[in-house]
Length: 317
Image 1 (tube, rainbow, N blue to C red):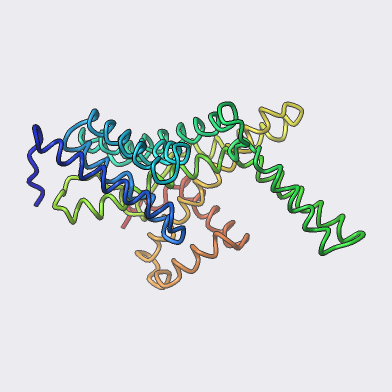
Image 2: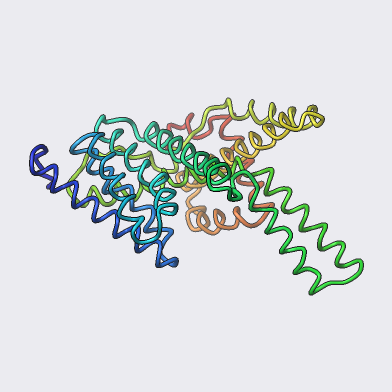
């Protein structure tokens, strides 16, 4: 059971412990790339735990301390960028957990904090450090030039022209999709850290951590169907207005992503009505990431459930 008593010397000891743990996780993630994807997502947890127990000011102090100590190991720039994302996410999670905020609000608040950090880092990279930013597409120019040069080593004539045209088209799609990618990454970081946090804190005896409903009960409002129509209208009718069309394109991608998630939720619920589907859920879900027609099926499944409320009318039974 978690029987920690806040205040006084206990606060200092806990802050020191959480700082040390966050620094160790940072160093492991930085110098061991094979496990960095998981380890970085654990960094918010000691900060969130401290925030739950001691409040906002202590979690902010520890985040600053982690950044200072991290800078000793891999430089102030990398340390600042790392703490801006995962440190701030831990602070937000701690505030939400302490105030018993719902899991949905915690997820969205954490994602908003991460997104703000990503944008702030991109601005700082461009205007303070004079470095190209991936988020704003600057770093993609060098990647495109390098890929074009590599094409010349493998192709000639018409094949070279076609290959370079394909690369250019692919890079243009990536540039247009960067805002959606940033939002998706922010949501993933928040969701993944919350999921890991629930597992860790439950083992520590903390039972009142808010948790998202099981996937089969995920449901999104119908307004996303309206927004998808609006997004396609903006992209089609406002082609001459690049900024508006750009917004429409990314809004459409996000709505498409929401339909896909609701389709997965429907797929996870389906064995209640059709037991044979249970063995197919994971293979279909994985294929929907890579195979176009499977992805389209899941998206249409989610869209139809969103409009018809098929699961909800059956009380998810």
